[in-house]
Image 1 (cartoon, helix red, strand yellow):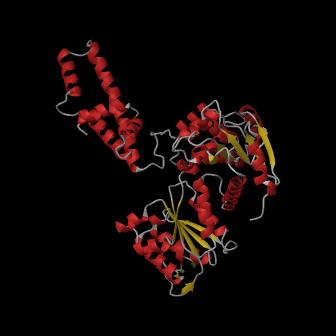
Image 2: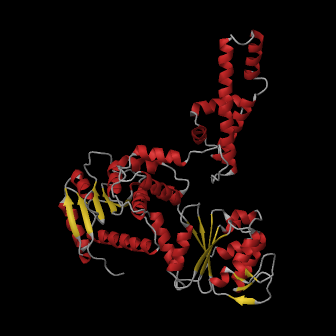
Image 3: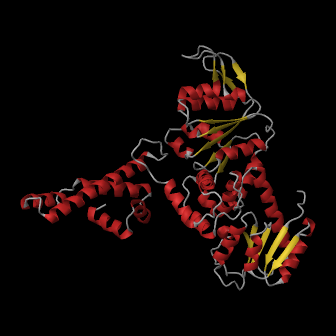
Length: 488
């Protein structure tokens, strides 16, 4: 690989020997090396310019090492952050990227090891850039290396991952780094089309093949001849079409719907799913032979939760793409809150979140309060109108139960207040109403809904009571008491 010149190294250390060894290791890269004694001056420098590498000597640091390294990653997320520390000082269970670090080195690290580190990280940066991604986490670099290994081959690739993790971008990376890069790349969402429409979309149809087939239509297998077809959400493809797809993959031939002529096609198929196709095959919902045919190379997309320390770099990239390239728009506490969030929508959710901020908070520093407000608004639910929320039926049902539960609680409070006042109710009527509402002999509607809400919450989090309590908006002790009370 050709040497990359002009790298800027920032060394934060009172010991000048580390900078000297680094100069020896990077001498073929025309390095600019700046050594600073303290972290205050380092933070000030990082507010003014970007660096390629930050070597942080953690010995003698007066603050938490976790806080120190995390703050350095916030200040310049594009830099390779390298911690220099005595063995054990960062904790026995530490993995380097826990703090956004590329590596953790001993203070007496030699020039040869430093050279290997620089070569490895530079190679990783180049591979990630070739894939068109943003990130420096081990998960992203490992996936980039695998994609670039698979791309030049003709093998079918199956990407597995949650929604919003960038499966189509990964498929494009396969295509763009393959011999087919100058040919068409066509993406088809298998879950977005009805069976008949999807069949026509994939294989085309002849004029008169069915009602409203007024003209001959070319399918994407024909249109992508010589190139790549990306079949997204392949797990949702109906079984009859799975058999036809398998035939195309094995014979490299396609026949239009209603046609008799067989056409040769030269295509590469890349597929993606958020389902476990091996389980679907066991249950008969997906053809086992097609599963094996698609997963010649099987790659798993990392969740954003598995690469949290890429969030500052991703956020700055999204801000720049939105035309708001304010490098330090997020303060430290804002990033803290963003890293503490679970991001169920993965990178797509983060991108949407940052774009909304760039529009609605123009020219302002983004604080933890703003982040909290926007995240809460992002997940607020308006139940007055029938809208598409993207939630599962189980989640929607759970929310409806909670809404009904809250409404019944309000009614109960009104009854209790009326009973307490006693001025507008006859004593016997008030007593009877209180007994009917609070009797333990036969659960009321309120109790029944409460039991259902608790059951649904526990089911959604696989029995984790702490998460269930958080989902229900009650304390853990309250949840334990309810579980014992209702014998759940």
